[in-house]
Image (cartoon, rainbow, N blue to C red; front, top):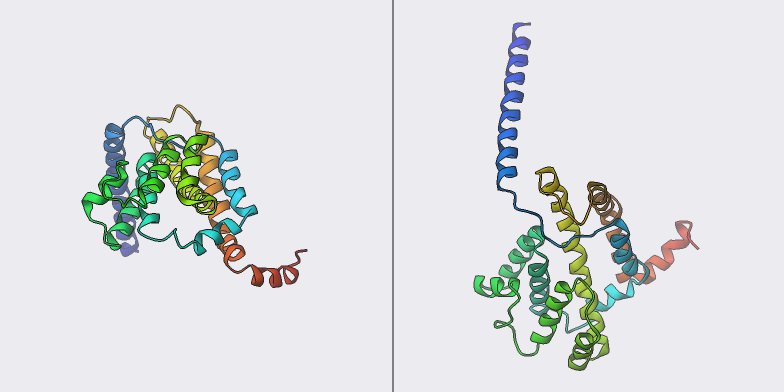
Amino acid sequence: MKGKKVLWVLGWAAGLAGAYYAARAFRAAKATCPPFRKRTYRSSRELIADFADFWEHPEYLRALRTNPLLRPPLTTEMMLAVTGANGCRYCTAAHTRLAASQGFDREAIESLLAGRVEHVTAEHAPAVFFARQYAELQGAPDSDLVKRLVEQYGETNARDIINYVRLVMLANLAGNTFDALVSRLLGKPNPDTTWRDELAIVSLFGLGIIPLVPILAARAFWPRLMAELTPLLGGK
């Protein structure tokens, strides 16, 4: 009985200590949290529209995998250019580690994140420049920008470059929307969204889209297998 009482006291002490340090961490984060100014999804409809296009056209992903142009270092360069424009800290950390593992040095990584192309080959520079502009224009490039991309790489490669950039944008904006929700809790809300928008988008991405990614990958990369399995699963 005495031992249980000791454990009870210790449990309460640990809980109080944890709550104290958690409160301190929250106050420190709130005091240092800057105003939120990143690009985000503004509604769950925008996220659904972006994902639905790839869901309805899995051949887009298949084309990205088979296109010989879309290989490192070009894909990594475009990824860093887009992520730098959107400021997604989660994607920046992941893409920086990936780039370093592929042999990119710190100077080249920081240059690409800043939107510069001095470390990019002449062949890759137009694609990296387009990727950055696409992100800065929030996915609405003007016709001249797209035309120049087509002239440089051809229609098929240009289409695949755009779809690759769109995938990076989807991940960036989802990550930034999660950050917007965190920033709101710290007293620095995103003026372009509400807490309902942010919660709906984060929930949709985590509970709705991420579980569908393996299925989308199977539809894109093993279409014959999926065609054979669909009748067995009750599909048409």
